[in-house]
Length: 362
Length: 276
Image (cartoon, rainbow over the protein chains, first blue to last red):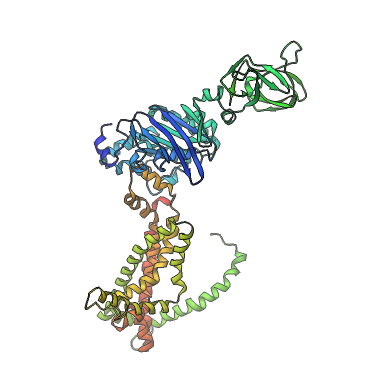
């Protein structure tokens, strides 16, 4: 945009200034004895949506607040592009924030809400009207421009919150559990809607959530955060197919975690029900194998086939899939198969076929 | 609100008390105020005479003026105090609440007497002014100034207790949102706090103004005979001059002034945005 001068008056690190992604370097934060963030470094490229995924109390919200400028880290730096913004407070940081409660100004119309950030930047009336008009079209709220927030549905309110944050052309868009207040069905619809919208605008976005499905829908990359540190960072596929830690394996999707044995450096056997099974292609490093329930196949028992047999303890019909609990000795495996294939009954003996490529986790 | 008819008897005790101590005396006063100069009834003579009397006009105007000043000062003192209370936590919250409520627990007359000591000629303030080199300090006691001080002291808690809930209803995240949009403290106060608590401000101001119009003890003890206000005028007419019809007529005018203000309250406090 061509309004750098008017914006810089009010906001020294205004979004229009050159922003080449975002970097957090060695961030740490404690509240008294409570460590919120142990040590986090992460960087994102321009136009990327990074999801911070973790359980409550993992430090993901603290990280977001530090990046927003609502908190000062005990150590470390936050860079927008090459500019160090660690000491710059929220007001001058030029970030867009979307809150779980939306935090719309209840006494202002949709139009006034969206114009707020431009008015503080002392834009001219005509420029504001033009920018608001554009963003209203983008979020498809043209017909609601004169409504009060209280008259809008949850989904519409969220679009207003998004428009209000995006219209200032923020250096980074921060989304704090933005779907938390919506019911499940609407939440899923809004996730796709917002992802498409963000894909069109491509802002730098950081999205905090504890919902793994939401993380997979929204994130170009996902950083799984646990106990104040990043466990693993990567695309949804990377995290799902090759988790590197126990925590990631069980937090993102379902996992059968089985102890690995064999050579210390590259274990090639796993133990299940007291039987050691050879793994053709172990991937990564660690002491535990992680097998996703849908990667396991079940067959009718065949003395010449798999060395591994088990008995079906329960079979649960889930619509598209059937989830089996298969007991192999003292161990239990969770197995998911597409539902049209042969169904096994409780008590059936089955031969269990493990995938050839199995990731190791720490 | 829907009321179950069979439970209506629950309001009977309260209704009896209200009729006995409120409707009956106020009704009597209203009827009495319609007694004419020559004892004829009903007549509006009294009102015509009163309202055309420059002295009485002066008393009313002065009461209204002092009431407005007092309301404004209560608002200016009460708003920061109420926001301090809302933001405080733990010990400080309790401490602020206590300091606001404590004066209400001390008798009105005792407190006002305290002010008359503080403001008296050669009282505390007088002494301090002399000590810092003002040889002829202005007279404080028995002035409009003293009356306003007394009233502000008595009415500020009502303002604070009305504003505090209005302030605490504001979602604090609105301020984070405004900050992220580049708004400073002053702008946030002007564009968020003020419009959002406007209904509370209106209610608080109407309450304090109404109370100030009937204020009796402050003008009596701190205003002396030099400052006549409506309530002291009623007292003089009724208890000194034994002119009950005139006293009741003044009281009715006072009542009308207050009712007018109160009737504006809902209009002033209305917010378009909270109506669906």
